Amino acid sequence: MPGPLIPAEANQVTGDHYRITVLTPRMLRLEYSPTGRFEDRATQMVLNRDLGPVEFQVVRDAAGLHLSTEAVVLDYDELEFSAAGLTIRLAGPYGYHSQWRYGIPNEPNIYHLGNLGGTARTLDMIDGACELEDGLVASNGYAVLDDHTIALDGDWVAPRMEGNTDTYYFGYGSDAAGAVRDFYRLTGPQPLLPRWALGNWWSRYYAYSATEYQALVERFEAEELPFSVAVVDMDWHRVDVDPRYGSGWTGYSWNTDLFPDPSAFLAWLHEHGLKVSLNVHPADGVRALDRVTARYTPDALAALTRFATVSGGVPVLNALSSLNAVIPADARVRLPTPLPGCAAGGADLPTTVMPFIPPCRSPSQCGRSSSRADARASRIAVADAG
Image: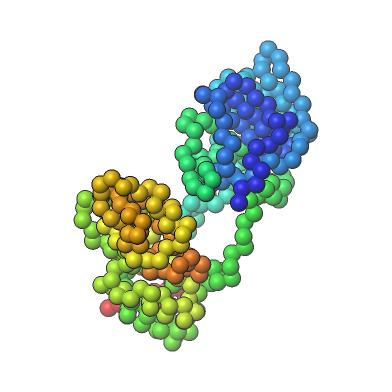
């Protein structure tokens, strides 16, 4: 849940179109708004902006605004943010090589390595090293993070204010632990991964039937190949759809030709000690072709019906029929959780949301396995699939 979102006014320096918030002596929030309206709601990334009082000084002169804390120094011409008009550097003797200019990437040069990297959005099609997105730590002491994520308005999502800039500056020097610690104060604590998530996951892009998948699991057991998660790729849902509804990449109706009894199939996997992940590409939402009979939680029903209309259209969800929820055939409904066929709440049924990847029907097309056990499992799966 979001914490205190609006810092004390004493932590803010504002103008007609800008707002600078001193979150900690080493973290600043930089906002520019063409309309003079600023974002005080939580976002998908940020849940708490009131991190306590901070001592800082502000001086204004003909060149603009100069703000300093015990750790950083900001110079700003009070115009629209630009590389020439907004700079921040670390305080002290190393400030020269730590100067950031707005909009200029922290690239390596003869003095430093630049940003030391964070994570990668996806590992699709990766076999070996890959480029990382920027992280919170850099060899020259600062990192910058733009918040482009959508806003949270009560218990639902909402668009951000158009045209606004929302940037967070981290000036933590070599204190990597401090940067990460304050980042989690800003964004909320992260739960530890459950033990089963660190085990082996079986995933193959192949149109298994329930019977074939069960036979494969039994073969793995016979070969003493341990798995903790069974991933069922996108063919769990209908993929051959009428083109007027879009592509078959998105779907929330079980393919009952392959899985005639989804609940029994999921229960069987659970009985064999496996967590289950259903691969879903959610971009198109729930469409008119999805006539599911799943038990949805009250929150999910509310989320689905929030976009429903009562004028024209065709029914989308049998689960919503008692609410007279209808939707135009070309409309989209989002956030269908838990997934069709899953127990209400779906607490033990994590859903993997995968980005689009080109179709491939064999392990050789989709990338090589990374371990002997994975390779052996792949050979068994291919052989059993005929």
